[in-house]
Structures are given as structure tokens and as C-alpha cells.
Length: 406
Picture 1 (cartoon, rainbow, N blue to C red):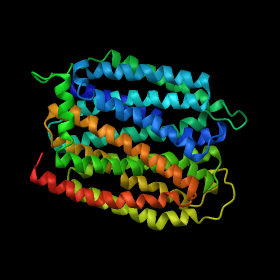
Picture 2: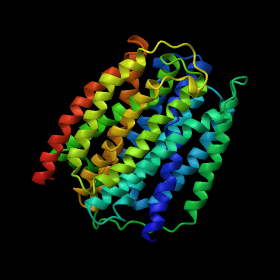
Picture 3: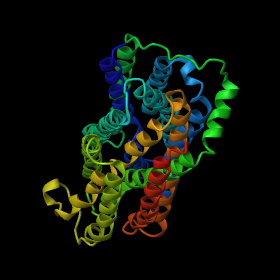
Picture 4: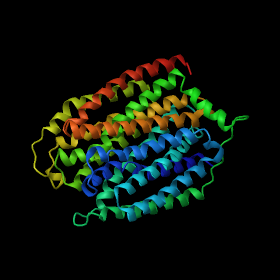
């Protein structure tokens, strides 16, 4: 299959799962209002999403080239189609858990396949950086769409109306399934003499490399920041800025749009500027937003707001943190993958997904605990801790890659 065709498949599948996977923040808010759960209980949805991603990725990443990336992606899309229909009829917190567990399992298949295929259509680190950033940018566009898609189906007079969105999502995944089914993707060439046990040992051995250790810590810290903010921003808008439910959700789209723009721009910027300087600048700007912008948003004295026109400008400023944290994840992934032989990309992608999932779960649980015990107005200040650690990890990672210790 030609490069353009494979690239189109990467974009399409990532776009579909972006809407599903990152609706968790919206469902967390709906769960508190419709299913009578508190902040800490609602945060468990992140674990139901991320832990299956971690477990499945760890178990199947090295095996996936043998069954074929196309078949893996078709299985993921099929499972999610049925899960979307199930939550519509189930309409309970337990069915929400089931939905995100299914999405987690399926996304593990999708992400390992997508990341591995990127290596087959790029020839050097700059191309890898650019395509990785573009794919992640498309992912963020899908997330942004979710923040408008769910309110479009939500009706304040009918608390169950929002569930109709899952018929649309089931149709979308079914269409994606059909498109992928008729696209030819050659099965990856297997590593001569390898077997499943050897592949699993290979993944474990990767974890002993200094470059990989520093990377997985960095990925863990980043996803803790990103998912912690993204999953709880609708609740922050509702409880701190006092926006209506639909506006709370739609305002969170500013973060997703900022992330999308940041990742797409990063793909171009890193063609001319070394990744270490791009990431250092970005994380420092993100920290400055938390230090100087967030207090002004928290300090707003407002009554309940019903439309965007009533929101003070400072209310739009904090979500712009996404513009600066956006380049971090795809560039970190590109740095580690381009430093490895292509035959190890599937195994390394498994580790990426595992530690990203763990970071997302722990980050959301911590923010949920902080929302409940420290107040929603204080929770996001604690992201400064992983941001500071992340800045240090960049320079350690740069030093190791320069020495080419892998």
C-alpha cells in the first residue's frame, strides 16, 4: 500500500478513537449529575479506560506484527461499536465503566498499530517527528469535536438525551471499520527466528536501558499532567467558573483545540529547531500559565454563566496551557522510537502505551482526590510538581540520546 493510503488510515482511526477515548471528562461530569457519584468515585472511569490500555498493550505489543495491524484495528473498531450501543441501553455508571474498559482494550490495539506503522512510512527522525506530531494533532482535533458533539445531543429537559450521541459514535466506528476493511495493508515482516516468548523478553530487556527508563518516566509525568487537566476541566468550569453544563463541556474544547494547534505546529518547528529547546520552552511557558493565569481565573467573582459572551476573557486563558504542553508527548515518543531499530518499534510502543495509561489513571485519580479534598479551585496548582520533574527529564534524555547509549 502506498504511503498516502497508510497515512490516511492512521489519521482516520486515531480521529475516531480521540472522540471516544477522551470523552471521559464529559462522562465524569455527567456521572456526578446523573448517576449520583462523587468526584473520587467518578475518577475511577479513567482507570477503567487506562488500565486495560496498559495491560493489553503490555501483553500484545510484541505479538501484534504476527496477527497484522489491520486485523488488530478491525477488532478494536468492532468491539467499540457494540460498546456504544450497550451504554445507550444500559444507561448506568456500571455501563459507563464497561464502555471505557472496552475503549481501553480497543485503543491499545489501535495505538500500537498506528505507532508501529509510522515507522514504516518515514525514513529519518525529522520525518518521524513531523508525522507523529501531525497524527497526534489530528487526535486532538477529534477530542475538540467531542466537546461540541456531546452538548449537541444534550437537552436540559431530558437527562438521558446525551446518550443519543452513542448511536452517532457507533455509526462512525462502523464506517471506519468498513473503510479499513477494504484498504490493503501488508502484514509486517516477522523477525527471523523470533517467537512470542522471545518478544516478551525483548520488551522486558528494553526496560533496563537507561534511555528507555528516562523516557517512560517522562511519558508517565506528561500524561499525568495532560489527562489530569483534560479529564477535570469540564468539572472545573462547572464548579469554579459556574458555567452551565453544556458551556462547561464546550469551554473544555479550548484545551483540545490548543493541543491540536500546538502539535501540528511542533511538527514544523522541530524541522528547524532541536527538540530539546522546543520542549524546554513549552514546559516553562506551561508552568508560567499555572503560576500567573490560573489564580486570576480561580479568583473570578461570577454568578452562574449561561453563554460564552458572559465569560470574562481570563476564563479563556487557562485552557491555552494546551498550546504549550501539546508538543511534549509526540516529540518524546518520536525521540525514543527513532533511536531504536524498526524491529523494536512494536515492543517499545507497548511500553509507551503502558506507562502513558498508568500516568493517565494516576493523574486523574490524584486530581479527583484534590478536587474533593483540596477544593476544585486549588487542584490544578499541583501540576507544577510533575511539570518541574519533566523539565529535568528532558535534559537527561538529551544527554543519553547524544551519547547514543541505546
